[in-house]
Structures are given as C-alpha cells and as structure tokens.
Length: 585
Image (cartoon, rainbow, N blue to C red):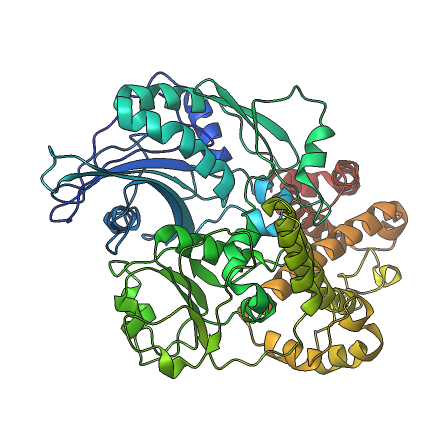
C-alpha cells in the first residue's frame, strides 16, 4: 500500500488516555521511493479511526511510516469526539485544526512551494497546522461496556478542502463501519493512485465505484467566479459526483441566526478580534468558525482559528488564563465549562442548532458580556463592540425576499458571499492602490546598480488618499471608514497582507532588474573595468541567478538563460587563471 496525495494515515482509539497510543500498521505494498516521495509532496492526508470503549488510544495508522508526536496523537484523539454530552444517535460530521508540535516535518510534503505559489492565499497548504475532518457514529450496542458503539473516522490534511474531504468521508465511513479493515485497505489502494492537487486543474478522483470530480482553485481565478461554469470550460466527460467547490460552505445556513449581524462579524474578523463561538455540537461550532474566517475572502485571515476546541487541548491554559489578554483567535467550543473559563474574552457568540425553516430564522441579539454567567445562557452575541460601518439593510431585504420566494439555499449563499466579497474588495482596493504607488518606477531600475528600495508604508499618507480614492467609490455603506482602517493597521491581518504584498513587490523588482541586465550591453560596460570589478559582477550575477531560481521569481526562462550566457561571456574575457578559479567556484 503506497502513499497518496489525498490520504496519509489511519488510526483507532478508546475513551480515556491512560497509556501511550498503540499503532497497528498496514503492510506497505511495493512502491518506489521516488513514487512515495512524489505522493508525499503532493498533499498530506491522514485518516484516523477512533472507538469509544475503555480508553482513547490510536489503534491504526496509514501509512505506517507517517510520524506524529505523542502530543499530536493525544490531541487528535480528543478532537475526534464530542466533548460534551450528546444524546443524539446516528452520524455526525465536523472538523478541527491542530497546531503541529515537535518542530517542522516538511521533507515529505516539499514540492518546491509550487502549489502555494499557484493556489489562492486562502487555500494554501499550512506547514504549522493540520486540518482534521471527522465522521463520528453513535448507535446503541449492548455488547459494548458503555452500551453504545461510538467511533470516528478522521481524515487529516494540511489543506482546508472541507467539502472534498467531508464528501469523501461520507462515502468511506459507512462502508468502513460495516466491513472494517478490508474495506479501508481497498479504498486506500484506490486513493494511492489519485493525482496531486494542481491549482487550475479539474481532477477525476475514483473511489468505491464513484468518481468525484473537483476543480482545484487557482490564484488567477476571478474572485467570486462560478466554479460550475469553470467545470464546463474543461471539456471533460461528466462525472457521477461533481463538487461545485472543494471548500466553500453553505454560508446562508451557517449564518442564518446572525444574518442581521453579518457586518459586525465581518468587522470583528477583519480586525482579528479574539472570539469564542459557543455551540451545542462540534458540527455547529466548526461550521460557524470556518464560515467566519472565510468571510474575508479573497483577503487571507492571518490569525489563528480552531473550529473545534476541547478542555484537553494543549493550548487550553494559554487561552483560558486571565493574566494576559486573549490571543487573536476564533475558537469554537461545545463544553459548557467554557462559559466560565472564557468569560473574560471580549466577544462571545453563542448559537443553537442550525435549522432551516420557511421563514427568516429567529435572529439572536447583541447582549452585554455581564449577562454571560449561567449555564442556561441564551443564544446571543455577547460584546460591547460598536461597529464602524452602518448596517446594510438592503442585504437583509434581498435575503428575506429569497426566503419568501423559496430561493434555494445555495443561491442565498451566493448572494451573501458576493456581498461579503464586495465589502472586502471595497476595503482593500484603496490599500492595493496605495501600496502599488510605493513601487519604484521602472525607468529608475538600471543594470549596474542595486534596484531601488520600495518606499515605506506611511499610514497618514494612505489616509490622505481616502478622500478621493476611498471605499466610497465602490461601496454605498456609510460610516467611520477612517476609524476602521486605523484599527485594521493594528491587526495581524494587516501585517500578513503587508508582508505578502511587500514580498511580491520585492520579487518583482528583482525580476525587473534581471531584465534590465539582459537588455544592457555588457561588452561595452567591461571595456574600462578592472578585473576586480568584473569578477565582482560575475559573483553578483550568479547570486541573482540562484536567488531567481530558488525563489521562483516572476522571470521568463529565456531571461534566466540569457543571464547564464552573460556570465559565461564575462568569464571568457578574463585571464585563464581567473577563469579556472571562477569555474571551480
């Protein structure tokens, strides 16, 4: 059994961890090291199965050579079960996000950064976190000591493909619970043959007699474009199971109890404010957290977030301490114990079960934090936050009209997502225009001098541009936009956005400098130069060439080849002893 881009390991466990997790390994079939390394690089997938009986321990891992620390094993065990009482029987799905411990382990997943360069920022592979996708089953079983069969099948990845992996589990888990390991081994052999996820490509992924067809989003996709239309442009045979999106949730269903507060929640996410989502189940908790962090797209949410968090998590003390301010994180919880331990957090969203009805769902109210004291606390947004922007009543009217006309939930979600996209774009476009103005002019880039520096970002200079080029050009919402920008400058989201844009601009400058060198007359430049100056140029050009290749700068291959030829031409003009030294160097 090999290693797949979409699957990496399996395991099983029981209720209280009283000993180290035990591993039962599948035997690996013959598979070349190159093939295994290729599959590892493409995408990381781990499936875990857990059973709730006497103690919680990992029972089975696939592939057998994938390594987790004891801390990670323990965390995954607890995150794979509801941590508060649930009398409901049947199947449940939810997700979690786990901080990697024990240092970086990237050798298996390296692809030279190619996937992350081509994928949208919001869908990049994370090196420091795992995503877990859980399928939990609870049914009565008199043969079990606890009277119930309780087991979870979990898929763990470094990619936030929530729709794809939950759909995959819906196919695999019921079969596994009935047929156990032989079924799982057959599925793994199929998944081993899946291609790696390549942004912009449509993939056909066969499993258990079904072909799942998905398109991997690309950074060059137009924000808000329809994935379904993109499928139709691929000229592929229709697949039995087409997923319109690998990651987008039903936003309307997730936000149904807070529709009139969506704008407030968008501001809180934009500013990276600490928030607790208290929910009755891991399903509601994880969906709400993922919906909140996705509402800034295409801007990347740069703070931490935990769709489902338990009292057993290794960061429990860090998040519940009152000796310092809460971290910039959105955390989803279900255990009522958190009502007391997280009372000091500035924003707490308490929601009930998500149920779709024929009318506008009952909207929860904004309440004072002081009222969050008892276990029977009612749903509400407990905060003292005052929004900077006025509420958009037009959006609520459109959604209400859709409910009255029995508009499908996916259409309502598209309306809501479009509104949030346009709101984010209206906010970010002035920032993009200003930072673009900090880029040196191309005519200032000369071949024989270091490229000029990007001018510093001055907040007050930016604020002066808003009068004539602010959000009011693209957004009808009124309010204190200036105040919102000032708060945004203090958030991790601004820091993440600025670092990413500055990195891209620096790489663009390097690329333009290389092109300027290629367009220059090197032979004429060398005529009045000393050997020391010429050797110095060779070393600098080599350094630039290596940097361009390692950092994958936006430079044409033809330009890199010309720089290489220039280096050879320069070396050829030097005395033989220097040529030998430089060729050896």
